[in-house]
Length: 130
Length: 414
Image 1: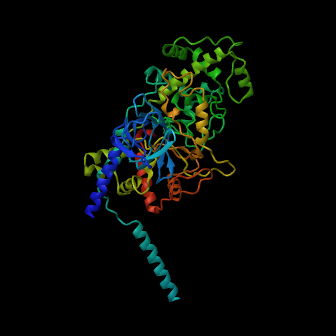
Image 2: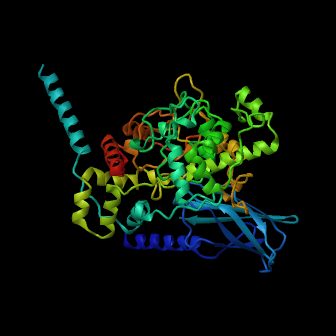
Image 3: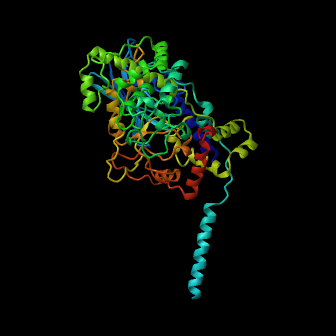
């Protein structure tokens, strides 16, 4: 019982850390790695804000000129994001800016980033707990 | 005969046992760290400073609030001299009116929402069809069921009446001269009424713009007043303070057992804080919760239409009358669309909720008990999809939730 509780606490700590700090995810087919950094630390509900994104390829080289979009929601509640955030490229290589993001409930959220570079298209799933 | 009697005794014993079980004493569980943080997040002590409104240069100007206060209670803003903002937003009723639907010149489309703490919301109205307090304040003035007025009447009144003229001028500068009736008709506005619309269409572009500028300023003064209408501390807030100080004696003095268990349900099994979160008990978002319409009345399309309207509203954050040269309008620029918004309405604050019946966007539910029963059942929506799921709570649990909700009433609200 005690070890189960410890396990849950550890999981919660790891997942919360994902929402707080720069963290990296690999795309489903392994073409890209996505790092995110929220301007809010920790991320709170009911506040519209931005995330800085960095995309690198499988070799770790910055990916410039990617076409990116994001969708998301709370899978457990079967609803989407309360806003329609957009992603724009930035002058710095591999850097992108996600604007207009807001969460309106505590719980498990999932963001699905689609990254397209030429013929290559891949998806990164980012799960965060608020 | 004896068999029937035995059966009756057995039945009575079962009923008594059931009620004893339902009302069994439950010793309150001490609040865990997570729950303490949730309680803190709901407390009025967590209410941040008012969000700045960069589209309104006089939003926090005390003189503008004084002008707005007078305008808010002035029935001369309606042509029949009988309707003011306070006709529906009555301070003694938590700035609501106790009616199913607002009653001005005629009956409005929806239930009157409270304006307490409304300056914290990025969206106004049940369907969010306005994106600032000042643009919202202009809308009822020209609604034929509310003030039934028109912007030409309003700007002429404010710029010609002695007191208002001086106050306006000190805030916004010299107003245009609207005395030339050939250029500025007695009544004109871009509304459905053909007489008002034709008179408005006959004016020059620059004259219409001059009227709109003054009209927007009037809205900004009313908004400055509304920003001062803020929620007051309640017994719930005092209880949270006692929890944070770990003052058990004070906790027991402030909350009885039903209220405590109701609060536990509120932040737990009843899942209320999914939408009613933060110190105002609202996420300011739009949800379809399957509220039925009245017989003979089409279901309300809610936010799906509200989004369209706010995007084309001439007084929105991106429009000509915003005071922010940078047009920082994140909420409007990243506004969500799509079928999830069909039948969705904005989550109301629960502060003072026991004093603001009836409930829901058309006042369909008369009592808190009916509201709680509705969420417990979570029926299918008439249009769109009901986001809520049945809760399966018992009647005593619903009663405890209601007991807790009554602790959110501020003493001065009524």
